[in-house]
Length: 85
Image (cartoon, rainbow, N blue to C red; front, side):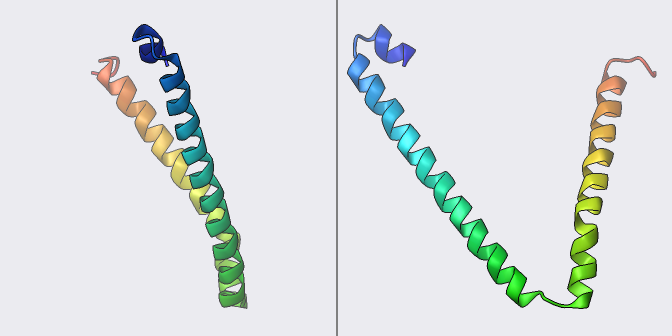
């Protein structure tokens, strides 16, 4: 928008913002619908004791994975500051 203002083409900048916003909204809506239907499909296909046990532990494993990655990134950042050398 700032470039469009600098070039004296404010209306063109507004059209670009409108087009980008509509495209982004469309992608987000379609992604949400795809996830909604995929969740319903997965619920029908994976209904059983074994899969229920697996899906009970998936959030815990995800949280542990994110925590380990975060700790690794933090140690790498500290290592690059030469504090531990």
